[in-house]
Length: 266
Length: 354
Image 1 (tube, rainbow over the protein chains, first blue to last red):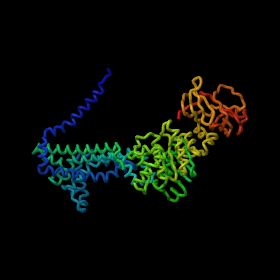
Image 2 (image 1 turned 180 degrees about the horizontal axis):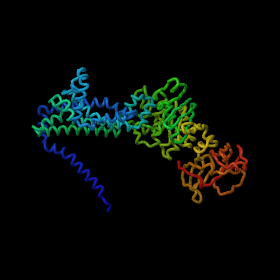
Image 3 (image 1 turned 120 degrees about the horizontal axis):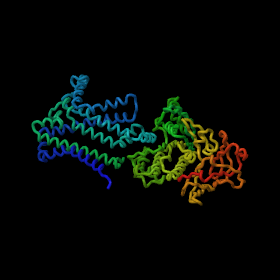
Image 4 (image 1 turned 45 degrees about the horizontal axis):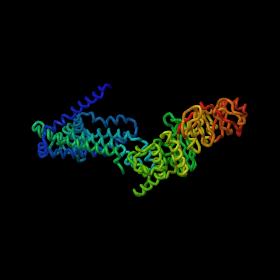
């Protein structure tokens, strides 16, 4: 009989990883009954926190997509002096501890930050406001999208763009008609990562925007606020966040799947 | 008329070419990889801007660096068939063909695309995605797509190299038909001299960024102007049909008449190749002697001295070239028009299935 130890080793490793990664998530749902879940949502502030999380995450995602997509395309398709530095700077927030990100944002655009005066003069209030939450989310989540989008654009065969242009279509329209659809699976993955990061954001939001119910208290902050006083409520809210995140992840997988099967017919 | 002139530095390569291609004519640029072949196509199509250059097509100026004219690729009417065809993977075959169509409704675009696919014999694949198509089918979609653009010039980058040997012969015939039909100048690049000879009305041999010789394939093979061209044109290539022959040899009936034997195995359509220096020459009147199994009657078309060797261009049912020593050439008293027998061994005869 042929030795089967290697496949067994692989299976054991995967099983260990799977158990470790899923056990805490399973525990959340085991510990909170469906009834508790609904009660927790009914609680004043919980639904408000969820609604705020979705709103702020959607707003920051919109900013990330609108600014990040062309930016990533430029970085992926052009070469210029200092490009490596630019890419590193764009990716920096990935490795920045969230608390540091919050402090850094305060130092930059906070009331007494280096651009604080200019921001105030423009009539925008960021610190301790919902807009501040959006800024914090955008700051920490954008590298997740931009990195993925860059890789997706770089992986597209450049001759497709050349072909489009020789077929009479300008670069801007070629970008929309060829580059975006071809890079779509990667862009969708980047969107999911950024959205996941934004929904789970805690440290930077707390430091920069504070934790005020209905204004800056997103779901992760609400969970933390309940943690010491009402563990069950914190647990239930966690379960809601897991469910929402999983739904987003699944819908992205669905988009990617239909894309791969050729769902992008014009 | 297509006119391309370009001088530009590309890394290590100094590209310096000037080409004219008439309406309905196909100029094949042949050369080794890195010779700058594709760069010429990119200059013509506007994907590469040379330091100095001019591109004119059908009376329009597309590029003139001196006058500061440089039309973007989308405004040059180029039918560029890319090496790997560059079909859009997210679109079906008909959507690919309809891509360059504009100023018409969706149903009109669809109808026109289907007509073109029909013309290339792949109407049944209209709704297929490129990745489900074979190499030959992809090529037809790519050609249909550039024809849909109504190009002022055809640019073909190694149109056959992505195909397997079996598909290649058929695809080459189809491409020849398209080239004759569209009646625009066509510029084709290839690393394969035989392909250039088959598809090009004229062949330009390009080396290190320069066209070193231009002429018909027969002219180039018969009288290469430089050692490089001689080497590049390399072997004589004949086509025919192979079947099993006597004593383990393969018998090849050549297209156009005559037959040769080879020690290689083969069956069906084949390309027969032999190096010119393997071919010996006898007077046609001489009785067969020696051990060479292959004998073809031919007429001397051209005589070129290369060093101490003499290269002979021979007219036979399919053109041949032979290389003999100067001594034997003078002993035979060869001149153009002399009728000779070209002989070579079955063991020196290579067969490639096509």
